[in-house]
Length: 330
Image (cartoon, one colour):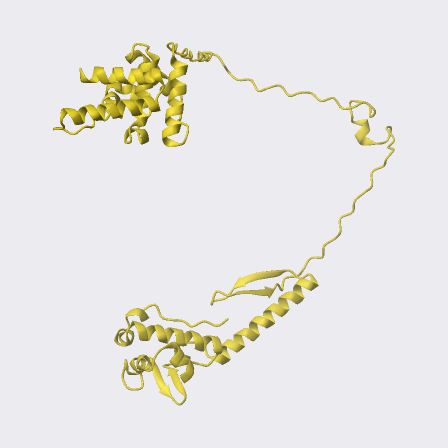
């Protein structure tokens, strides 16, 4: 594989700056094509037009003194200026390839003959191989003796030096553990296990409120709520706030999940934190009536709310909701 080499100072050469980035890119592509096809810098007109337009090649031709631009216009195409001065010619590339093929052939022949081969690196950093001219020492095959399957104890030196009869199995003696100087060291104290917190006692009616919370949450959001120790303690606080009244606690939960805004946001933690907040946001039309309504409109809305409450809730819950309304308006 041949290469097209560019000097490290070419990026700001006067000719390159005068020709421009587009023209310099076309010049690099043309040089790569010439190196691949071994044309010694000659670019045919068809390839030149494929790489760039004609005005780009004119800039490459006119970026220097007459006849010294980056390319020279010749018959049938363009010639890269001083190709043989900066790049390897086609004859040099072919000669190098022939030398590489010859070295590779000699290396393979040496490997087949068993001659050691050393690797060397030439000046152009291409790996080549040369056959070592050092004298090769012949390898003498190692001789192995076959052990006697039935040795004579009176003549075998290995059996004469053994301290146990050959028929006895070897005795394995466990090595003694290394001795450590433990003088002055204090024995490590075992850490006492951390006492587990006892489960808090749940007030009466706790399971009923938990079941009701699950039903209300799943009806409002379509999924079951996450419930753990914190949520269980929140239910206990809610029952403590309503003085153990299970129906009233269930009514507060129902009010929270009947409200359009709180039904998508509230959890039992929010409800137990401030139950009075949810009493003020229960789905009561009285609470949502705008200011300035007449007494007749106010009464009609109250009756509509009670009718909807009676249809939506069982009688104990409806009574608890009415009690909460009365306590809120007192």
